[in-house]
Image (cartoon, rainbow, N blue to C red; front, side, top):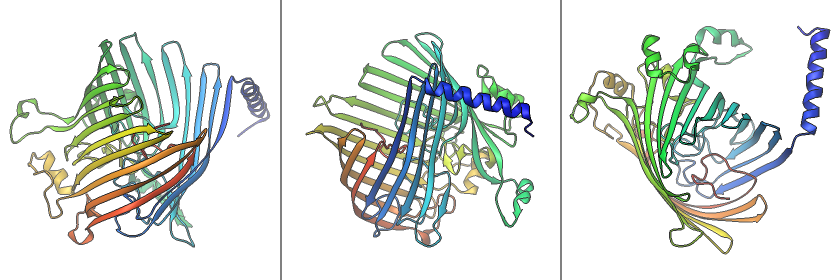
Length: 466
């Protein structure tokens, strides 16, 4: 309970904060709005006909106060023409909370971030609720922007010119009901209380010489307890700690190599490891749960303003999932790593150039995603081999070709128009409960038109262009 002394202290803090805010070296509050319309819905829904529109309005704040940086954004989004999840098979960031309109079709959802950073000469400490991306690729299999923003804290430390350490701890949404605590929210209506799920991760990047960067990451997913102090120690291998705790958590590791020809040209590869039995590596019956990625980004290929990007990502059906589902590498139902999840693959190619002040973007994506049944989960821990993309409904196969033109009208205001061709085999596929009766093959063309002001929703365009 607040007493008179506490009220005085709180008032003084607010006054001091207000004074500091007045003398901040930079304060920017920027409006944000956008709308994007697709005549046949594109990849937002699996129906052949039926237009779809997503629009939003909000604000962004950027405040610099000495060594402190405050960055926040809130966007209220409204959706029409879509009943399911528009981002179920899309690199766009997932939805944290949605609510259906009562009197009309469609629904709304929110996008919110708040990141507070404190910078020193060789380190950045940060906390808040924001996105995180680790790894050299666009669609990272390590830590990606696919899940909705979640609370986290951590730091980036440049130990020296060649060595960098990153660490963070985040609080996820498991989606698994805690029946004991949920009973407290059953009176006039009811609400679900989730079992806590958390993630801790650390990453080393070493550059032995200018062109080469070697990265190594370790991630642990744990549940039931909200914060485990053992995983607050950034310098100890989590693999060892989870053994110390009884081998009940979900530890994943990865390594990556990036070669920079110069600041605008690079090639890279990523190796993601969920489980590994080295002596079985080259045997037909293996216990190697891997994900792979390789890619290149090349600017100034033919013209000074062009860029080509090629990326291949492949994930085994056994990664990201755990024998105890409460430890799955997911938040709000979306994977922490590769946006298509386990048992998936994607070839992505994009070429863009600026011509007459208009950016022209031509992209191609070929994505496959297979089933993830409970029987497959049980079999993987019994070392029962599974043939990739097999089952009553083999897999979902989505191919898209997009041509998009984007032109900046004034500072921050962009208009875009284009066309999207979608070839979708087994549209409506549910990896966890594949049913031949609920899928269909769809081919459609969508005309795309939209405009935005100070807007960049994570993953909407894999490569963000100003």
